Length: 68
Picture 1: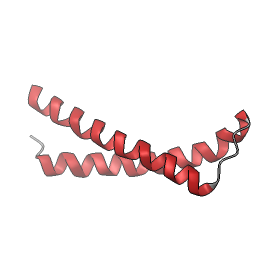
Picture 2 (picture 1 turned 90 degrees about the horizontal axis):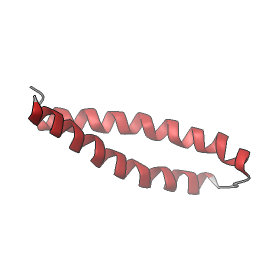
Picture 3 (picture 1 turned 180 degrees about the vertical axis):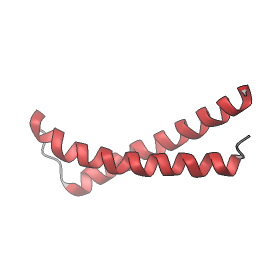
C-alpha cells in the first residue's frame, strides 16, 4: 500500500514533468493558432494548471488506494 507521503511525491513528480511538457507545448502550439504569449505568461498559465493537476493527481491516487 502506498502511503500518503508517497502519493504526494508521485503526484508532484508527475506534475513537474507535465508542467515542463505543457510549457514547451504552449510555446510551440500557441503560435500555430495566432496566440502570441510571452514566456512569463506561458509560465504563469502553466503554473495555474500545475496546481489543478497536482490536486487532481493526489485525489485520484488516494481514491484508488482506498478502493484497493
